[in-house]
Length: 113
Length: 112
Image 1 (cartoon, rainbow over the protein chains, first blue to last red):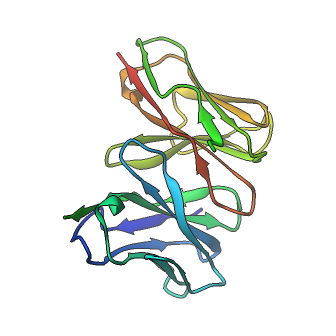
Image 2 (spheres, one colour; image 1 turned 90 degrees about the vertical axis):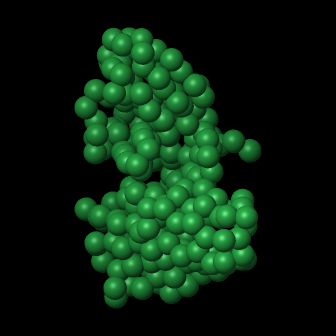
């Protein structure tokens, strides 16, 4: 199976600064890595994902990087805004099952005005 | 635009009651999952299903069962509700091989 560790558990940044959340995974056979954002009282929503044949992917202010050798991937948010405040979850899909995501424990991001 | 629907947003039940949480998806996904979410514990997998009438235990199946009689519907059953089952319950679904989940809005269950 797969194990995903996520750090930090809480992160506070000033509005306009960058935020970085890191995850490590255990199984080199994992090949899909999504990130979910969960605002207070709402469902987790997919914000960006990356597959193992790509090293980096960007979508406006958010980007994800993947280092397959080191087995870690990171979420980068630039020019943070108060509406970025939420819990962020990383996840990994193990190629062996191709069905079930293993989630990290989550990071509470707070953007201070 | 809602694609995964959970029947109740808030639910209050008494200890010992049998509780049904319903989840319906309209995306023809093969895979469906039930998670519970508690502060500081992240998302914990209770049960999942890859096909009709198929079910597999997740990490914390004790005290729960599931039913999947139709592809679009996956029910979570608390056979005899207890106070330690007070939690937020999230349903999700996905296509095999594509990875990404779509989550429902969640059911906040309180057992008194």
